[in-house]
Image 1: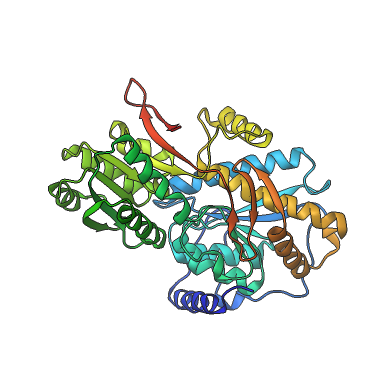
Image 2: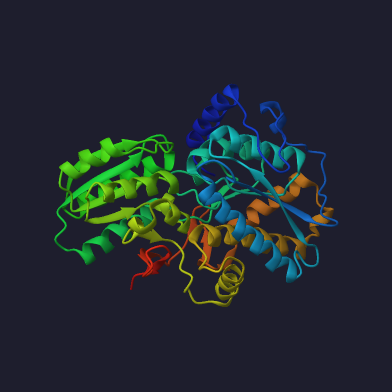
Length: 413
């Protein structure tokens, strides 16, 4: 059993959010859901005689959409791939998309709709850790499995027994990029840190970055805060540059992080920049353009990872989007894959279309945690708490083409 104190705390925080507002979603979302709708319907049976519904609750609008759109792409590739291979022993899966937007209310609303209206067997989402701390308890109360595709903040799996993630925790991934920066420039002595103070993940990540700076015997010369909605960083950037750092580390999202990189370069900073996981997307390139060149970002996925399923995923993504697949797409694919393979394992023992929906959700959650999965991320499994077990990690650097317009993530050896 997981930490009951952490679960209770998460539930209380969710109740507070529910008392304030529930945001609207897009596509098939229902705007009228309230906290009273989150109870589990114990008489419901599965509607899997024709399809198996899996919920995808990610950010398709707002400033977080730069990340969520990549997750939609990865999930859709997974849907086609696994249905072409026969789905769940002959029954196709159907992904049901709900837009969480970029805030907690949007994520709560999306989860409620997927659970109570769409009757999904489980949910992939949400995009942000900030949203997960509020929305995951909704699924926990209803006993609906959740797989976080990009929730890397501390204590996400501890939210509840039905919460797991395929995204490796920031404590494992983030330090790799600082070490890569030191390898490129062993003369680094002074470090400036920026983080988005209104985002749970960025606050969690910056703690890891700052501890890594201390562990590497570097001097932290300044810590600058901002909001993910900010577009003007001149004050913070000027303060940091005046501290004469050799390295700048940014924990933010794609839009705000990209603008911060751009403004740092425009104000004359020429040293190395490390970006956090929220900036781990090629969608950052239209934001900082040529000034993105050289940014280092740790990775939990490489398109070059060996294995047939990654080769197939990589080709499918490249054929459709004419670029290499990003981490967020690979993690969304992996999350869908976990559901498919867990459902297939259950179906061989007891036909899933004969199980009552609450029973199927419970058995699915157990199977998810007990399985091993050969995904585009490599082989993964889960601890009893729901934490992903993954062994391969990387660091990539943004490299601009000669035209200084197009660019890509180049993986460092």
